[in-house]
Structure formats: structure tokens, C-alpha cells
Length: 171
Image 1 (cartoon, rainbow, N blue to C red):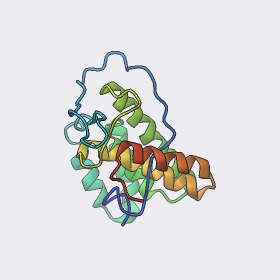
Image 2: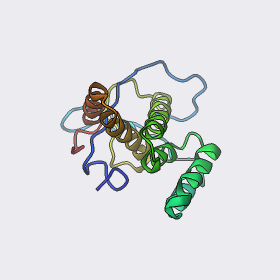
Image 3: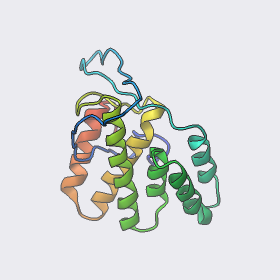
Image 4: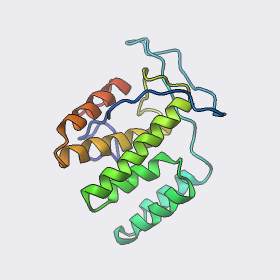
């Protein structure tokens, strides 16, 4: 089972962590839970996707394989902050270069979204929350593609980062 179905399938994300400053002008309030009972770390939940983005991504994924990439590209262009579109583009790409590029875009846009939500480089970002899945899928795609192109140190950083974000993640 791939990352499209469950984050815990046969993959493990966690790319190089790049903490940074809060995004100026961010309007989304941070969504923290009280913390994990095992780690005590706060949990960040990304804000929901813009209206229509998730539905458009699902419709694009339902397209015939030869039309899927073009349909997903249209979603990514219309809703560039919709992380799942970038992750799905990485999944359907036919070359390692394209997979890596789409995954990297989703990963970096995800870091920006996490920072805007108040994440400061530590704390949980769990798969259990639908809103987090586009970022985690992007991170998993980055891990898998880094491994495929021989960037084993990056693949390992991604794997460790994913386990830090979601201790329940299974390789």
C-alpha cells in the first residue's frame, strides 16, 4: 500500500527540517491540542484546504491514468497552497526528477503552512488529521524519491523527521 492510502503503509517521511520565522500576515490561528500523552508535545493541525480543492483533487485522481497528471496540474495551479495536489503530482509523475520536484514543492509549502499555523520546528503533525495528510504525503514522496536517486542521507532525514512528526508512522 502506498502513501496515497495510508501514511503508515510501506513508506516513511521526514525531510530535512528547516525551522524559520513566523509568516507575516498569517491569518490562520494555530490549532494545537493539549499535547500527546506520551510525549507531551503540542500537536499542530493545518487549516482545512480552500473550498473545492480537496474535491478537485479527488476528481483529478479519478481521471484515467493518461489524464491524471494534467488534471492534478490544473488543481495545483488553481490552489497552489493545496498540499495534497503537489503530493499527488509526485505520486503520478513518470520521472524521478518530476517526482522529486513536486514532492519538494509540497514539502516546502507544507513547512510554510506549518509555520503560519504556529509550529516552531517541534511538536506533532499527525496523519490522523486529514488536514495534515498532503504535507505528510509530500514528505513521504520526497523520502522515497531521494532514496530512488541515491540521496540516502536525505531519505534518512525524511524518515526520521516523519517519525518525529508522527510517532505512529510505520515504515
